[in-house]
Length: 197
Length: 152
Image 1 (cartoon, rainbow over the protein chains, first blue to last red):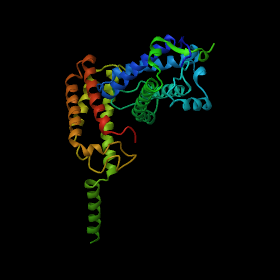
Image 2 (cartoon, chains in turn red, purple; image 1 turned 90 degrees about the horizontal axis):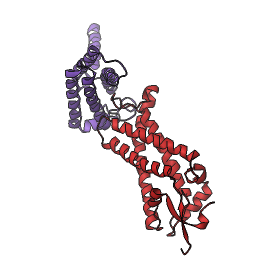
Image 3 (tube, rainbow over the protein chains, first blue to last red; image 1 turned 180 degrees about the vertical axis):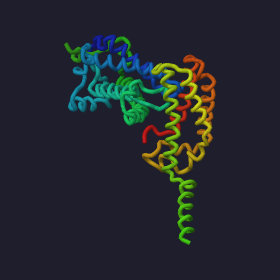
């Protein structure tokens, strides 16, 4: 704990803006889907925005800055297990960017969001007003399958978000690490040996 | 005597056909009914979304046909024992329909009223048609959400 900490830049503006834009777009899409008007135009627009965010994040994961790239933060099972064993301990993780367990969530949530966007685009609820824009290009069997996936996937996504938020709380309460602030400012305090050169 | 037996058999067969249709037949007829609703609605939806050109006569005719369909007696189409629990793979009608008939009737009333409103405006131009079709589609969705399974 006596180690000196350096203010380190980990999250570039693209990562931060896309993160918080995704929070807003997800909450809006989810809320409008569940509680919104029967004419779901706003849900559709919100979904298109969310789709754009996911596409940009995937591209940024390939061509973006160091901490944003999948190649940097996606680790094998050995590293994941090793990091998972440190999760219960009350010491701060001091991760530079995504930790190996968090990486699974990042990839997982982008994957499920992609499936959710696809199922929404293909879904046909047969009300002739809320038909996914791509439903006309697939068979009615596929459009029905997409419709039947769209709601369960929304529940799965909600559970994933709750798990994500629970992890943030765990780091704050148990490990004394504020993970929200870096996602706003871009900076996190790290000891020298945790900062790659 | 033989004639009597034959005519009795014919009468009994006819009676079976007419008065004790199988649950599968009911589900089939019910889906056929909603296929007709969808057929008319498909035209109106495409027009409202600009996928086909607005035509006052075609829109009015589709609205009129929907109104005719709302005059159909639904109780025999929703005979008990014909839910997707009873007939898996044949229907998506949830057992909730029979557990909550008042709720279903509310949704049906909303559909009926939306069709009536649509009939008042269908011939009055695209601007008038669009919100009416939207409202009608909304009543489709409201019932599908609660009472129809997403898949077979």
